[in-house]
Amino acid sequence: MTKKTIIVSNRLPVTVSRNADQGITFKPSSGGLATGLSTTYKQGGNLWIGWPGTSGHSDEEKEHITKKLKKDNMAPVFLTREDVDKFYEGYSNKTLWPLFHYFTEYAIYEMDLWESYIHVNELFRDAILAVAEPEDKIWVHDYQLLLLPGMLREALPNATIGFFQHIPFPSYEIFRLLPWRKETLEGMLGSDLIGFHTYDDMRHFLSSVNRIVGYDSSLGHLKVKNRLVSVDAFPMGIDYDKFEQAADSEKTKQKVIAYGDLLSKNKSILSIDRLDYSKGIKHRLIAFDKFLSKYPEYQGQVSLILLVVPSRDQVDQYQHLKEEIDTLVGKINGKYTRMNWSPIHYFYRSFSFEGLSALYKASSVALVTPLRDGMNLVCKEFVASKTDQQGVLILSEMAGAAKELSESILINPNDENQIVEALYTALTMPEEEQRSRMKEMQKKVRRYNVHRWVEIFMNQLDNIIERQTAMNMR
Ligand code: G6P
Image 1: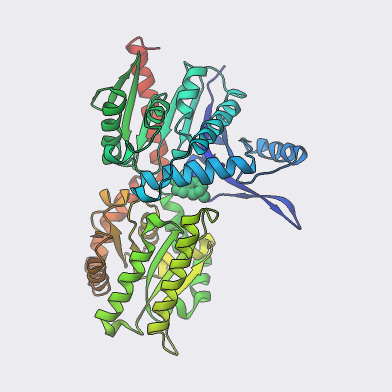
Image 2: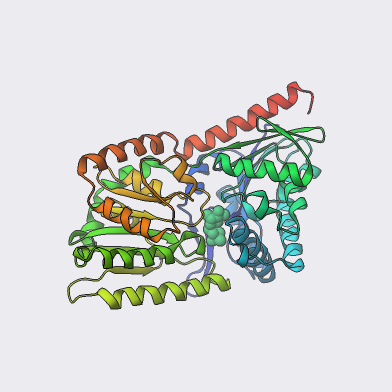
């Protein structure tokens, strides 16, 4: 029997919703991971296992969803409303997310959330065991499923298990605050290969492994009981060609025309994020206010296009943040707006792909200033969309992408004055300098695209299995 590859992530690459008129609808995701892995999971007997994004389905609905997904090589893990509450909104997004992004004051530690996290990781394990053969290749993604590799290793000792963490791995001093730190590391160590976006994340992980569970590493290899576990950095990329081609497409041109004054009249500074406190949206707004006040000649000349994509809106911190952003935008617009100009164009919704492409293509500056971010793909999408190489990227040092995009204007997101000066530098940067910086960044983003990322991770997973075999470890 040939081995198959099973991709596992909390969300499936499709969102299922319940709609009053149309019943159950299926919307494919255009996200980076979905694009990068689409050729993998759609092949032969391969498949993608994950949560369809809803809860409370009847048995009949579940059957319908399962059948429909099966046709596209997907299998659902259904969650109850309580699971969504405690596992997804709870432990994943009120404990791990804030802690791993260094928002220690937001992280809560509650036993019933932890128990729900174990329970849902078990649901994922059972869904995998229902279809997996003993030697299949299983690639688990992200912080919602940290225990899954360990659970799978117990049930399928000969499986090939890869794990990739899409968010930062914090330093030991932060990670050790987690009451379930040992169980978490043991879960991750069920993998054969563990990947992070950056060497710093990898270093932090290895240091926690050493200090909490006592395994030493040598050149990214750990000996865990009688197994070899490899740990490495794999900076994730984007589908470069898709953004590059879209930037010069007719559809994008039409969008730019449709957006009219928004993009053509003034220079625009672009800000795009999911609504999240880790993204530094408030700091960015305060810095923009300071910029308009320090350089009043830009009033009436430059606008901030602030696109905030709704996210995790059942979690308190996200609701508060939304209110704070609304207030700040209102304050700044109230302070500077003129009859024929507004400083901020604020959108609280998601945009179509063509809409995003038009914004990337036509903006002068991208302001990407997360307080902490595993990678950040928005900055890479902006770079790929700048086919005329005109445009400036201002990027936070705290984003994983800063390690690659050193030709951007790098800033510390906590330093508002530095953001103010970076905006001034960006808006006055000579065309030739914009071109030379953009060209260098494009080379890197084009080369290390999402397809290369998948290929490198998968190859390394094969290599580690060969190495284990040569060392009589399997
Ligand atoms: C980040 C995480 C992903 C997550 C995504 C959207 O990128 O790394 O695992 O899927 O945010 O968040 P959501 O809570 O809507 O799945």
